Image (cartoon, rainbow, N blue to C red; front, top):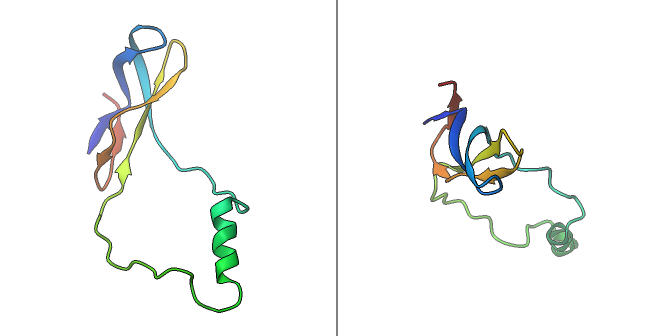
Length: 93
């Protein structure tokens, strides 16, 4: 899917329509000592298996891509509607 790199949208902070720069959301680095990771490590200790069975039937083929809109005036960021597509391509208009 092709998506514009700049778009004119309503900015709730400026309370008017402004030009927004579009980037794609990327997941941050996971914390190694997060609570859930520590629980999994504790469950795995003592035997060589995984604590829960691994789900092998993948129902969804595509992940959702979330565009992030950044206002050119105030710099505030907001999420746009997510799309479930194989590839979301940002292009110049």
